[in-house]
Image (cartoon, rainbow, N blue to C red; front, top):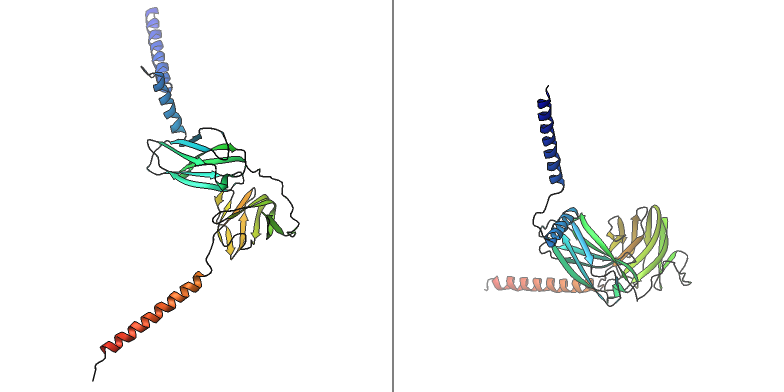
Length: 289
């Protein structure tokens, strides 16, 4: 091979190598020719949004108990469904749930911290869910200036050894697989009992609150999630919890005991009316002699 041929081959290999490197670089780092700084920010925001299905943030990190929290967020792939906003308190109980519509991949809402469910100081978790658990995100805010929530349980001399004390109310209980560290009664339309536990292994908690505490049991949450492994008999509830569980919330519902009596009276009146109308109809169609 002469020198001229060798030189020509080197030039060809160099050109091919340069084109290959330039092509790979262009694929990994696409240029934004003629873009302004604002355009570059929008491109970066879209790239980040595609990497995170749901994002959520607040206007501040710290609030008082009479403040308004502004919540904003974005979804990557808008599907026409609303975003579900769930707020979890420092006691790991649900403060509020709301659904927010999505417009142009964005959503926003406000939360008022003046309500009774916001009375405890501490860190509140604001969770945004868009259809599935995989499409969710959360942000934490701190609220101060209200009632302090103590993690150390207090002993009430009026309650027995096998009873829980929640806001002055005594409730018989039993537990296996862990220990109860504290209990709190949340007042409200239905009311709820929040029980903090130290679950060393899978176990069972049985609680029998009085009707003065909650009248009827509607739902049970374990660590903020609705729990199905529950047995409810009248005002007695048995919850099978997994190892590592921290909080069990028993949500009550009011019933109207007089409803059964009223319903029976209405049914009796309806039956008598039907019999009377039927008897009158039979008499009216009998031939007269």
